[in-house]
Amino acid sequence: AQSVTQPDIHITVSEGASLELRCNYSYGATPYLFWYVQSPGQGLQLLLKYFSGDTLVQGIKGFEAEFKRSQSSFNLRKPSVHWSDAAEYFCAVGASGTYKYIFGTGTRLKVLA
Amino acid sequence: EPEVTQTPSHQVTQMGQEVILRCVPISNHLYFYWYRQILGQKVEFLVSFYNNEISEKSEIFDDQFSVERPDGSNFTLKIRSTKLEDSAMYFCASSWTRGPQETQYFGPGTRLLVL
Image (cartoon, rainbow over all chains, first blue to last red; front, side, top):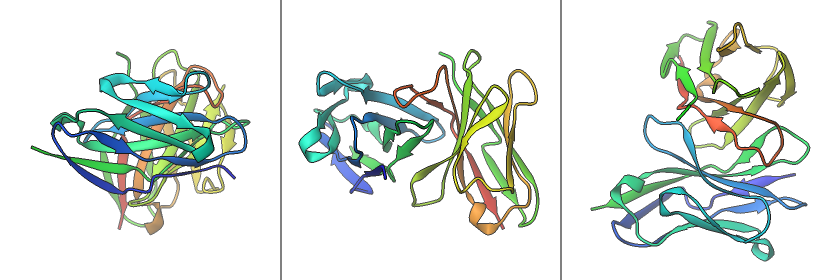
């Protein structure tokens, strides 16, 4: 069965530091992968998505993610974190043959000034 | 930019009461979804809806739950007789087409607390 794991529940980084949020998936075929962000009081906003092609995907707000099939990973990165990046980040996989997304538990990012 | 809206943002109810969570999807979208997240757990799919019918539902979506598109804009989730374990954040989403590659646009959620 498809599944998504986000091993880090909470991450704290200093403003200006680099960031990597981990996401591992379990899926038999080529996955459709998404990263969403939820700021307080806001909906889940799509940061980026991967379907095929170039394994390094660029998203909004300076985020990127790299698909590594050999590691079943789709980690989200940002070279320099801003205080406004403090939010909860969700990794999801689109399940082939169904309508649904399968989500991880989310990673809550705290940014220190 | 068009967005999905949800009301109320928070709802507190007594166990056994009925609740209706409301969503206004993006206006030209055709597929609608409900997900929920119990505190500390994963966001879970509940149901998808297209052309006034449920197209897929999870095992969570039992007879206590129902969805409806009562008019051209609203999409509702009704929980007939709430249980303590229904306490969660409920997210509505919509998309233009279906398929695992299709971006689903999510609302801000309704936090439901059942006492």
